[in-house]
Image (cartoon, rainbow, N blue to C red; front, side):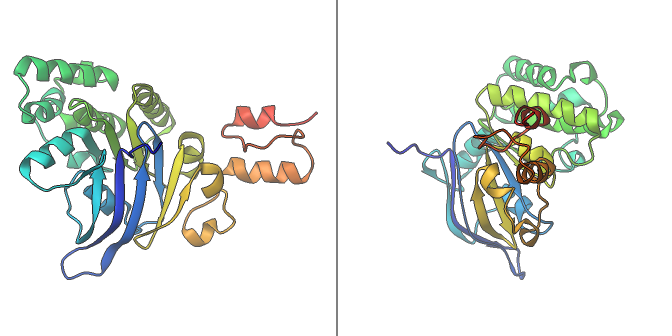
Length: 278
């Protein structure tokens, strides 16, 4: 039995006005409830692709589907889609504009036409999820960079999306900030959300993603499991570095320091340690 993908991109092409193609024949399938990493060098088209997923941009040719339904660009369909597919930009200052954090997060559910009490409950729930409820009355510009990123995530969560699309969410975060983000994303994944993330951090993607797509010069040049994609021998040509754990594992394996029968590459330091022979 064939399961309908939650999001499918077919032969998508796009160019900005009077410019060369930014995306060319992009094909991508996103299963429901999956952690997906989109990788590639700067200028590969990741951000432009993301702007298509919730219909901020419209393809020059090709099609997108949400849960099997062809994207339309009517007001009603776009409103529905942007509630289902939430987009968090790389720079949180692009999204934060209201007088205080609570009102900023409240804007989304109110814009959906929800009753005021329902919208406020969803806003409080979203702020609790990102551990920012106590900052609700603070102006957004008083927040740290990591807190601003969490506030931007809350603004999307308040609309209760099925898909969360995040453009380089770990960029600019310190180690505690990344740990906090991982905790939030783990909670969302456990709730059944589909998570799509653009990232340059291959070590983070190695431990997090279930599915990886590689964009290069506006084309999808590879797609599959982290084991199949992130450890490719031609990774440099495709514009990304190999995860450190993959490098270490291969060297240990060549020196016969890995337990016999160990097949799956370790996804964490703990898994690597457990794979070592005495």
